Figure 1 (tube, rainbow over the protein chains, first blue to last red):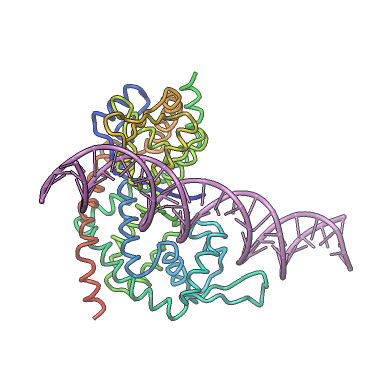
Figure 2 (cartoon, protein in one colour):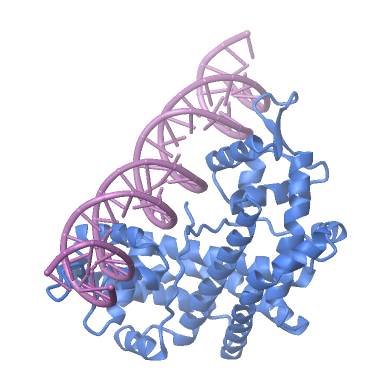
Length: 183
Length: 183
DNA sequence: TTGACATAATTAGGAAGCTAACTATAATGA
DNA sequence: TCATTATAGTTAGCTTCCTAATTATGTCAA
């Protein structure tokens, strides 16, 4: 499943929200505002991240692969596991690894134990690329978050946790409510 | 600029974060955790939205266009304005409108005032499609947010506002810090 | 008036994701 | 044992985004 988030430059004004509530009474203005702001801020952050990475000649997908490899003690993993952790298809991971291998940032090593499988290894060049990019990335994350006191971070993370826990409700019950709605 | 957010299924454990901090001392674990959780929750929400819309035969891009049109008093706008508000290129908007027009959800009307311009109008079919989709969408947003008390919504929106305001720092100063870092 | 520039929309071609099909290898069980 | 099924990775073809170029029209100032 492809995940494209649009930029939503134009959040609804209170007047517009009111207009929608009049037509659709089940709308909860507060919940909708939070939902839209969340999407909006996240897409802005993701765009900023893209811009930062592109200065270093990297794309987000390939960069996350490098990070996932660096997390491993032996700097090594397999395409399937990487795809799973990154939430992309194995086909997409093949493409990401092709790009990284071409740039010499990772190396594919064929496994003796299971000849279907491939070990992907972060190369010295890849590690060195991360050593250039990560300080820049971390500095930017720190800067754009620095107005937020420690206390608020905890609050934000708590709130996000609550939303995550509420997400199963999204799939589970909304359908039946809709049916009730349409009767 | 294309905006693809990967799913980041695998947030770093405290141990892994610690490992990264040791190599990159400028890393701020709290800020990074907030940053990653924010991206993670937003992508989950966006995926859930996709799933909801696809049940109604819609894709996110086209759906947002319908909403933008419905916000207008005369249900009408132009491709340029829609592209601007949605944060996509005009070329992409052409494609979105092609799809919507093919399904009869919008109508292109050539303007007499400015013959370069096209007026895009939400059709009765399009309005009726929204009348089916929006109650379902709003019900789901309400459900997945319902564990969050009103007070927390205000807190969340305040925090997101602070982050948005901090974002210029992302582009402005990180570069110089990086240079200092690399000396 | 008309030449230069600006603007609206589209078209053409490329990037990076997806699903489905394919190849090779491994595991299972009658 | 060996046919069936499962798994790892890749390839092929599609989608929807993008940028750049194109076409048509409008604006402005010499």
